[in-house]
Image (tube, rainbow, N blue to C red; front, side):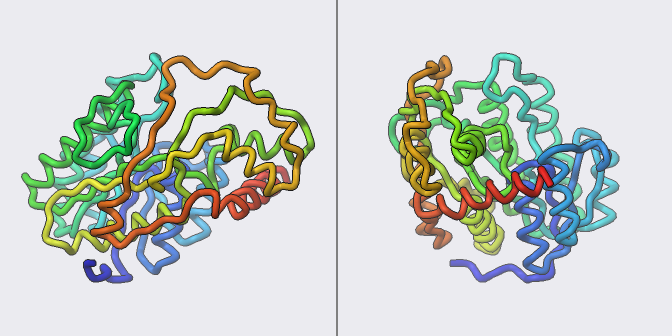
Length: 330
């Protein structure tokens, strides 16, 4: 396993108003790094959970920079000014990600075209490497555990845009001889997640002893606890020391667990009656795959990363979501 990269690096992280981006910024700032976080709008324009995330990000000592990542001149000036040694390219166009309304042209600008000026400027300032946040959506539908060398046939325009970003980063890593790691992230849950997602919604209903109408929830997914995911990103950072210009890693639990099982276990953790979970009232969404999970064998063998089963972390996750709801409402 490669030795750890120094604890006083200058790190640039884009997309820090997002769930994973905010947690990344806080994690590396708490580790003693000098972290700059990119946001796309004026700080005062954010509300709800994004405002909460950014408040936490700022409180941890991260320096925020407002920037349109598709503007190469401004992006270049910023990188030349702060001279980051590591860049986490986490920003991505995700609006309507699973919908036919997804703006593929905007996604290509944000997710793909922005990469070349990033690599060019990072190379110019002597950076150590780049970490790209990829997605399990790059693989498409697959009933078996996805491997990093599998043929990718994404079924959504969003997945296509992320796959193109991965391929482009591979080209740029070789062109600029800049070590690059792509983290194909599956389904993270935990602190600072979107309160409108299924799990926080169900937790809030159960807390109030209200019934919640659901689909059959038989679909199986690969969930990863956010803290385990952050440890994976930390190991990817260290892996930039290894003599490999470009690598892809699945950051996933390696387990396919049904959403129904997760929700029943949540009810048990909260001491609530499982009869409040009305499974089968709503149909599954059209086109939703029955199973999606990855193999983390490569990350385990090369990085020494071994995340816990999500069921082992449910009590921590549930309590964190409840506490965040209390904080937002106070």
